[in-house]
Picture 1: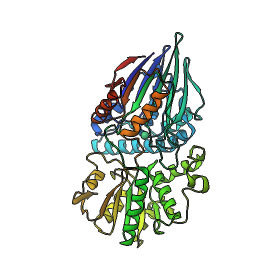
Picture 2 (picture 1 turned 30 degrees about the vertical axis):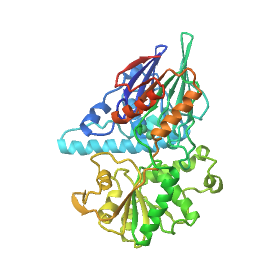
Picture 3 (picture 1 turned 135 degrees about the vertical axis):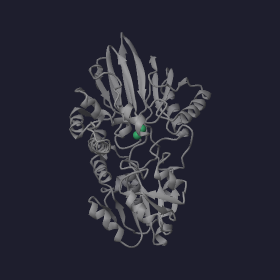
Picture 4 (picture 1 turned 180 degrees about the vertical axis):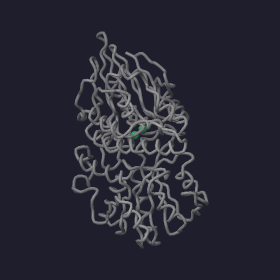
Length: 460
Ligand SMILES: [Zn+2]
Ligand SMILES: [Zn+2]
């Protein structure tokens, strides 16, 4: 049996690892490469292996950097099974439809500029077909991936439906347990259950996104959120939150809901101004079986995302009308790095008002508007106009959906405690500086660690 590292190798996006066993080939994830357009365009249009060789796909979770190229496989002729948890399947239906729409719009835009036909990476019909091939399996219940490989999903605690994957492999009578961490979440994150480190691993593929830093505590993040809302409301300002549609948005809604119930923040209206976030919130509501029943509010409250102060604005008219409402309010809108989406309209209008707060709750990549806000650049460029940044800027890192350096090491220690025969740890899904830092930490603890480059092959 052999592993080949393909995507998210020495980088964060494009998650895809190839398992070859008994003459069969299995893909773990098939994610979109994101980043500089020219580089990622080329990578996204290159297949990891010829379609005819792929026998099965096992998906860890619905984030586009893990699932985004599945419709491309379908466009190229893939017709076999894609495994996922039930919540991942439902989230993927929403997110891949959105992704297909973006691909079609992008191609249209490029075609106009270049004055030639541009084939989108894939279209809506491919995202629909992807869902037909996606088979949902419950957590902790084994499923047959290909002959000689049995899969099993356990909680990864990262986003709704997210999983670490256990693959029990048998070849020529030899048994090995391969574990793929998927993206590992933080313990104590609201709503979803905490990560469950798998046991009995021989070979481990592990994410390393935040391998070089620690986050603030989950409780600390919630307390700071309350403080930001109180301060801004007392000035009569707006709290503008750029947020990813999946995960972050629901965490913030849930926290605001619980803070209102405790009267820890004033009763001001909360607007979720993103159709995709509204749809993904609906998927959350469909999967209470995945919620963390140790949390007080999860046990006591039936409608976690629906309460009198919250408003979901779906249409463009409803979104525009927010500009004419006076008084303090919270507006949560995509995109998470303020590169696109409705948050841009709210920032164009609100960034110059010192009563307002722009609240950053997620990672902001270089060259994004979100990063310039974090750096408190005095002038922002929005829709080609210069907007002075006079609003208060607050950054809360505790809402990260990823385990930090300490939490990753703790997760691995727990895997090791249940895996006396663990022989190798392969770090993926991290920028080189984060991976190298984590590798140093883990090697010092006695682990055999590698940071494989793309196309590295490992027999196990
Ligand atoms: Zn993820
Ligand atoms: Zn990821």
